[in-house]
Image (cartoon, rainbow, N blue to C red; front, side):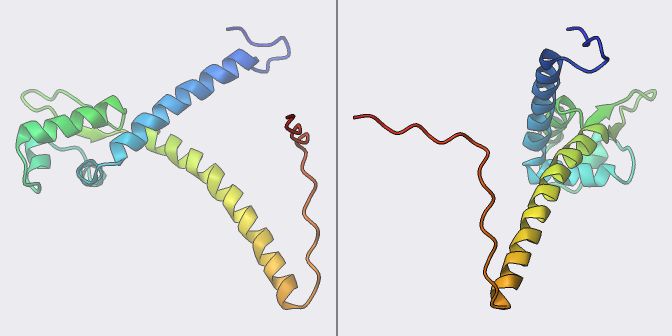
Length: 146
């Protein structure tokens, strides 16, 4: 992959970055889908801790908690360090920030749509005629033959 001469990214670079981001988002959301893993992350917001301390509030074994931690670790949401005899677990914020950025783009899209809907409802309640919908920029669908 090489950058375009004007310094912008090429089509292949863009597609590669979208593919990587999609894989990261998939792993993040899959890890967040489980309530136990979300609770583990909530605990880690307070600071790093050991696996044994993470297991205490849950009615499950340390190996079960370790399996949840492996999922979180593969998603990049936690990391494990070495501190003499301890192996502290800590929260890694980057994947959560990436997921938040992705969600934010959709929030902005839906807010704009709700604003247009509010404006339409306001015009209808005031007895005004609604504005005609914007013309689609898509080409018309071909008619079926047969």
